[in-house]
Image (tube, rainbow, N blue to C red; front, top):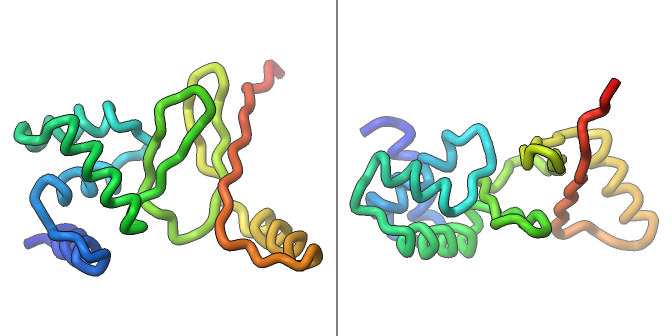
Amino acid sequence: MSAEINDLTQALRDAGLRATQQRMTLLSVLMNSADHPNADELFVRTRAIDDSVSLATVYRTLSALEEAGLIRRLSFENESARYEITPTADHDHLVDIDTGEVIELANEEINHLREELARRMGYEIVSHHTMIRARKSQK
């Protein structure tokens, strides 16, 4: 067994989920995605590896993985939900309104400033999701 398979199996078990082949395949596809795929894109990618996977299985698995905290669902206004592995570090997302591309913005300075502002107001951030809609400059 490869290290990745052992890690996926352990992550599922730690989350209280059975490590089925379909769950492991979907999680592996998501871990190896450079983008933030939606359920239909994940279905196509997962089905290319395991043709026993149905769209209903993808939706059920995404729901179970999200509930277990292994993945995060990203909602961008009028688009289908997109998914990412739950990040180890906070980051924001920039959505290119012309192409739909989703870009991760990871910046410790922004994270620190956000926490500091909340603290000054008497709050502790429990979770956050910042989405910035943008268009490339024409310069």
